[in-house]
Image (tube, rainbow, N blue to C red; front, top):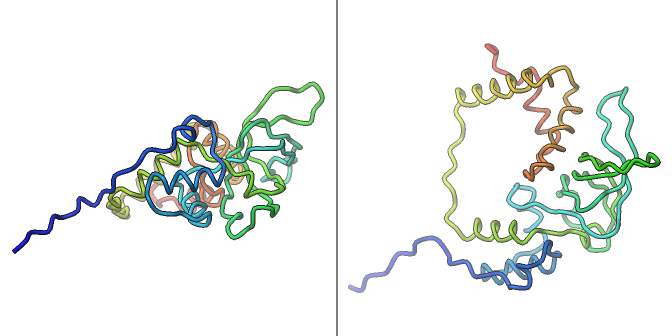
Length: 226
Protein backbone atom coordinates (compact mmCIF):
# COMPACT_ATOMS: atom_id res chain seq x y z
CA UNK A 1 0.00 0.00 0.00
CA UNK A 2 1.32 3.39 -0.94
CA UNK A 3 2.08 5.66 1.99
CA UNK A 4 0.62 9.17 1.99
CA UNK A 5 2.97 11.77 3.40
CA UNK A 6 1.46 13.84 6.14
CA UNK A 7 1.49 17.59 5.78
CA UNK A 8 3.43 19.47 8.39
CA UNK A 9 0.49 21.90 8.64
CA UNK A 10 2.68 24.87 7.81
CA UNK A 11 2.61 26.52 4.40
CA UNK A 12 5.77 28.01 2.95
CA UNK A 13 5.62 31.78 2.94
CA UNK A 14 6.71 33.52 -0.27
CA UNK A 15 8.62 36.76 -0.26
CA UNK A 16 6.82 40.10 -0.57
CA UNK A 17 7.53 42.10 -3.70
CA UNK A 18 10.94 43.79 -3.19
CA UNK A 19 9.59 47.23 -4.07
CA UNK A 20 6.82 46.83 -1.47
CA UNK A 21 9.35 45.69 1.13
CA UNK A 22 11.21 48.98 0.77
CA UNK A 23 8.16 51.17 1.41
CA UNK A 24 7.44 52.63 4.84
CA UNK A 25 3.70 52.07 4.39
CA UNK A 26 1.53 50.11 1.98
CA UNK A 27 -1.82 51.22 0.60
CA UNK A 28 -4.85 48.93 0.87
CA UNK A 29 -4.37 47.61 -2.67
CA UNK A 30 -0.64 47.03 -2.13
CA UNK A 31 -1.39 45.25 1.14
CA UNK A 32 -3.96 42.90 -0.39
CA UNK A 33 -1.64 42.17 -3.33
CA UNK A 34 1.23 41.44 -0.94
CA UNK A 35 -0.93 39.03 1.05
CA UNK A 36 -1.79 37.17 -2.17
CA UNK A 37 1.86 37.05 -3.25
CA UNK A 38 3.05 35.75 0.11
CA UNK A 39 0.27 33.30 0.96
CA UNK A 40 -1.09 32.31 -2.46
CA UNK A 41 -4.70 33.14 -1.63
CA UNK A 42 -6.77 36.29 -1.89
CA UNK A 43 -7.81 38.33 1.13
CA UNK A 44 -10.66 40.81 0.95
CA UNK A 45 -10.69 44.21 2.62
CA UNK A 46 -13.34 42.86 5.00
CA UNK A 47 -10.96 40.05 6.00
CA UNK A 48 -8.09 42.49 6.50
CA UNK A 49 -10.16 44.78 8.74
CA UNK A 50 -11.34 41.76 10.74
CA UNK A 51 -7.73 40.71 11.34
CA UNK A 52 -6.97 44.23 12.59
CA UNK A 53 -10.00 44.07 14.91
CA UNK A 54 -8.53 40.87 16.38
CA UNK A 55 -5.21 42.62 17.00
CA UNK A 56 -3.32 40.62 14.35
CA UNK A 57 -2.30 43.72 12.39
CA UNK A 58 -2.33 47.49 12.84
CA UNK A 59 -3.98 50.00 10.52
CA UNK A 60 -2.75 53.56 10.17
CA UNK A 61 -4.09 56.65 8.44
CA UNK A 62 -1.93 58.51 6.00
CA UNK A 63 -2.58 61.32 3.56
CA UNK A 64 -3.99 64.79 4.16
CA UNK A 65 -3.57 66.35 7.63
CA UNK A 66 -6.55 65.81 9.93
CA UNK A 67 -8.22 68.02 12.51
CA UNK A 68 -10.16 66.68 15.48
CA UNK A 69 -10.80 66.71 19.21
CA UNK A 70 -9.06 64.90 22.04
CA UNK A 71 -11.23 62.61 24.12
CA UNK A 72 -12.73 64.12 27.27
CA UNK A 73 -13.83 61.44 29.73
CA UNK A 74 -14.78 63.55 32.75
CA UNK A 75 -17.09 66.54 33.26
CA UNK A 76 -14.32 68.96 34.22
CA UNK A 77 -12.10 67.92 31.31
CA UNK A 78 -12.36 69.87 28.08
CA UNK A 79 -11.76 68.41 24.65
CA UNK A 80 -8.90 70.12 22.84
CA UNK A 81 -8.68 70.90 19.14
CA UNK A 82 -5.69 69.08 17.68
CA UNK A 83 -4.09 68.42 14.30
CA UNK A 84 -2.57 65.11 13.29
CA UNK A 85 1.22 65.23 13.03
CA UNK A 86 2.12 62.21 10.95
CA UNK A 87 0.62 58.76 10.59
CA UNK A 88 -2.08 57.86 13.11
CA UNK A 89 -3.05 54.44 14.42
CA UNK A 90 -6.70 53.57 13.91
CA UNK A 91 -8.16 52.44 17.23
CA UNK A 92 -11.75 52.04 16.02
CA UNK A 93 -10.95 50.06 12.86
CA UNK A 94 -14.26 48.17 13.06
CA UNK A 95 -16.15 51.34 12.07
CA UNK A 96 -14.75 50.95 8.56
CA UNK A 97 -16.25 47.50 8.05
CA UNK A 98 -18.57 47.55 5.04
CA UNK A 99 -17.70 51.11 3.93
CA UNK A 100 -16.71 51.97 0.38
CA UNK A 101 -13.39 53.64 -0.47
CA UNK A 102 -14.98 57.10 -0.84
CA UNK A 103 -17.02 57.03 2.40
CA UNK A 104 -16.25 59.30 5.34
CA UNK A 105 -16.03 57.92 8.88
CA UNK A 106 -15.70 59.21 12.42
CA UNK A 107 -12.66 57.42 13.86
CA UNK A 108 -10.79 57.15 17.12
CA UNK A 109 -7.08 57.66 16.44
CA UNK A 110 -3.91 57.46 18.50
CA UNK A 111 -0.70 59.20 17.61
CA UNK A 112 1.30 62.46 17.62
CA UNK A 113 -0.73 65.66 17.44
CA UNK A 114 -0.24 69.42 17.56
CA UNK A 115 -2.58 71.73 19.46
CA UNK A 116 -4.27 74.81 18.00
CA UNK A 117 -2.50 77.06 20.56
CA UNK A 118 -0.43 79.71 18.73
CA UNK A 119 3.35 79.15 18.85
CA UNK A 120 2.91 75.72 20.45
CA UNK A 121 4.88 73.37 18.20
CA UNK A 122 5.40 70.53 20.66
CA UNK A 123 4.00 67.17 19.56
CA UNK A 124 2.20 65.00 22.09
CA UNK A 125 0.76 61.51 21.71
CA UNK A 126 -2.99 61.56 22.29
CA UNK A 127 -6.12 59.54 21.69
CA UNK A 128 -8.48 61.70 19.67
CA UNK A 129 -11.53 61.72 17.40
CA UNK A 130 -11.60 62.93 13.81
CA UNK A 131 -14.00 62.89 10.89
CA UNK A 132 -11.97 61.31 8.09
CA UNK A 133 -12.92 61.78 4.42
CA UNK A 134 -12.28 58.79 2.16
CA UNK A 135 -11.27 56.88 5.29
CA UNK A 136 -10.79 53.45 3.69
CA UNK A 137 -8.65 54.92 0.90
CA UNK A 138 -6.42 56.57 3.51
CA UNK A 139 -5.60 53.31 5.32
CA UNK A 140 -1.94 52.38 5.42
CA UNK A 141 -0.11 49.28 6.71
CA UNK A 142 3.54 48.67 7.57
CA UNK A 143 5.19 45.96 5.43
CA UNK A 144 6.66 44.33 8.55
CA UNK A 145 3.19 44.07 10.13
CA UNK A 146 1.73 42.53 6.98
CA UNK A 147 4.57 40.03 6.75
CA UNK A 148 3.89 39.04 10.38
CA UNK A 149 0.17 38.68 9.61
CA UNK A 150 0.91 36.44 6.61
CA UNK A 151 3.28 34.36 8.70
CA UNK A 152 0.60 34.02 11.38
CA UNK A 153 -2.12 32.98 8.95
CA UNK A 154 -0.15 30.30 7.11
CA UNK A 155 1.33 28.81 10.25
CA UNK A 156 -0.19 26.21 12.49
CA UNK A 157 -3.04 27.59 14.62
CA UNK A 158 -1.94 28.28 18.19
CA UNK A 159 -3.22 26.15 21.05
CA UNK A 160 -5.25 28.51 23.21
CA UNK A 161 -5.86 27.56 26.83
CA UNK A 162 -8.43 29.70 28.65
CA UNK A 163 -7.35 31.19 31.97
CA UNK A 164 -8.72 29.45 35.02
CA UNK A 165 -10.33 31.39 37.90
CA UNK A 166 -7.12 31.57 39.94
CA UNK A 167 -5.14 32.94 36.98
CA UNK A 168 -7.82 35.54 36.24
CA UNK A 169 -7.80 36.65 39.88
CA UNK A 170 -4.00 36.91 39.87
CA UNK A 171 -4.06 38.98 36.67
CA UNK A 172 -6.65 41.39 38.11
CA UNK A 173 -4.67 41.74 41.36
CA UNK A 174 -1.53 42.55 39.37
CA UNK A 175 -3.40 45.23 37.39
CA UNK A 176 -4.77 46.73 40.63
CA UNK A 177 -1.30 46.87 42.20
CA UNK A 178 0.31 48.48 39.14
CA UNK A 179 -2.47 51.07 38.90
CA UNK A 180 -2.07 52.01 42.58
CA UNK A 181 1.75 52.00 42.56
CA UNK A 182 1.73 54.45 39.65
CA UNK A 183 -0.79 56.76 41.32
CA UNK A 184 -3.41 56.14 38.66
CA UNK A 185 -6.16 54.88 40.97
CA UNK A 186 -7.48 58.41 41.64
CA UNK A 187 -8.27 59.06 37.96
CA UNK A 188 -11.56 58.36 36.26
CA UNK A 189 -11.65 55.04 34.45
CA UNK A 190 -12.14 56.52 31.00
CA UNK A 191 -9.50 59.20 31.52
CA UNK A 192 -7.04 56.48 32.54
CA UNK A 193 -8.08 54.41 29.52
CA UNK A 194 -7.20 57.35 27.27
CA UNK A 195 -3.76 57.65 28.89
CA UNK A 196 -3.09 53.93 28.49
CA UNK A 197 -4.17 54.00 24.84
CA UNK A 198 -1.79 56.89 24.15
CA UNK A 199 1.02 54.98 25.87
CA UNK A 200 0.24 51.87 23.80
CA UNK A 201 0.51 53.99 20.66
CA UNK A 202 3.85 55.41 21.82
CA UNK A 203 5.21 51.91 22.48
CA UNK A 204 3.92 50.52 19.18
CA UNK A 205 1.48 48.11 20.85
CA UNK A 206 -1.83 47.11 19.25
CA UNK A 207 -4.58 49.36 20.61
CA UNK A 208 -7.30 48.01 22.92
CA UNK A 209 -10.89 49.12 23.07
CA UNK A 210 -11.39 51.83 25.76
CA UNK A 211 -14.37 49.83 27.05
CA UNK A 212 -12.18 46.73 27.44
CA UNK A 213 -9.64 48.70 29.49
CA UNK A 214 -12.37 50.18 31.70
CA UNK A 215 -13.87 46.73 32.27
CA UNK A 216 -10.62 45.47 33.80
CA UNK A 217 -10.09 48.64 35.84
CA UNK A 218 -13.49 48.74 37.52
CA UNK A 219 -13.35 47.93 41.24
CA UNK A 220 -16.19 45.42 41.06
CA UNK A 221 -14.15 43.31 38.63
CA UNK A 222 -11.37 42.76 41.18
CA UNK A 223 -11.20 39.61 43.32
CA UNK A 224 -12.80 40.13 46.76
CA UNK A 225 -9.54 39.48 48.62
CA UNK A 226 -7.57 42.25 46.85
